[in-house]
Length: 204
Ligand SMILES: Cc1cn([C@H]2C[C@H](O)[C@@H](COP(=O)(O)OP(=O)(O)O[C@H]3O[C@@H](C)C(=O)[C@@H](O)[C@H]3O)O2)c(=O)[nH]c1=O
Figure 1 (tube, rainbow, N blue to C red):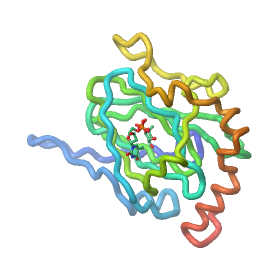
Figure 2: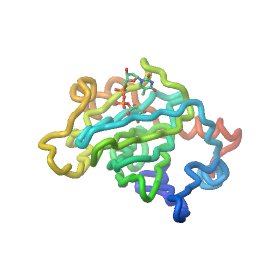
Figure 3: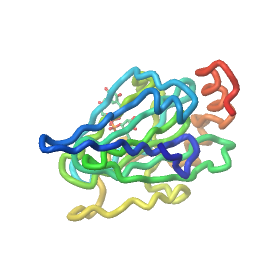
């Protein structure tokens, strides 16, 4: 696991064991995640979505507490996956990082509480599976405009797609500044306090 440019997110590169039958990976290792993050990752829900090329989902986040950490893997096709720092007071507030997740590398990304998440499907039938530490709480899940110039995510172009396809909700999503002004974002201190409560001790 290697840390992303946004603190609190990690890219996970599994060993892919290939043989004449196909391949095998450990898609999720609780022990490895706990060792890298210093805290438990208790799965409460597993989501899966299938997207056409050019479908953009996000940027989404769940209010704190408990927010929702996600362990995201692409099991068919590929996606450009993005995390955004939404912790008010964080030195990297508003910064983003992106990584390609695809079915051959079986790379995953771990997105901690307090971060925003989204992805762009790069090809047909892009299938994303993600383990979540909290159940879906519709009233507490929110979106931010994925094209907000204040974040300036460099979404890649998708062959044959003139414009990304978004849900109505995502197309109408407010800016980072509007979401912040509405008081929906967690502070860095709140996130830190929550993470410490998971281990019952201050995090180093
Ligand atoms: C997220 C979610 C949605 N739904 C329902 C609500 C709706 O009818 C339908 C589609 O929901 P959405 O449009 O919100 O789906 P989608 O845009 O794919 O939302 C997801 O985007 C990615 C980027 C994330 O990080 C996820 O946490 C989640 O927010 O599925 C659930 O029943 N449970 C869930 O956990």
